[in-house]
Image (cartoon, rainbow, N blue to C red; front, top):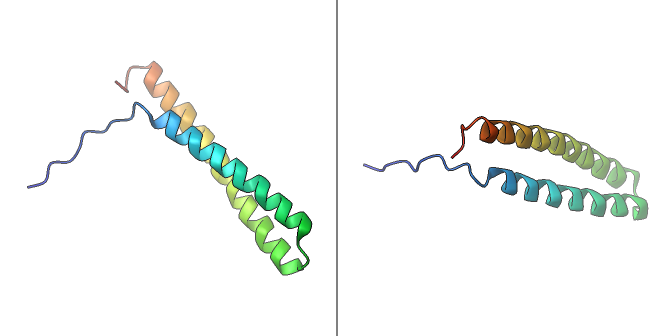
Length: 77
């Protein structure tokens, strides 16, 4: 029988922040691609992708706040 690993959330904030940083970098690269794009379809596709990234960033920032609150309240050891 496999034992599940205990939930180790100590570095979640760091991991989430790295994901935010990477997503922002990808967002900026895509903005450059949009400016240099010739096709309207390509521009629209890239803009939609960045809209999803914006939502992801908002969600990750909310998750960081939740993790920090849990840590402050002693729920993460």
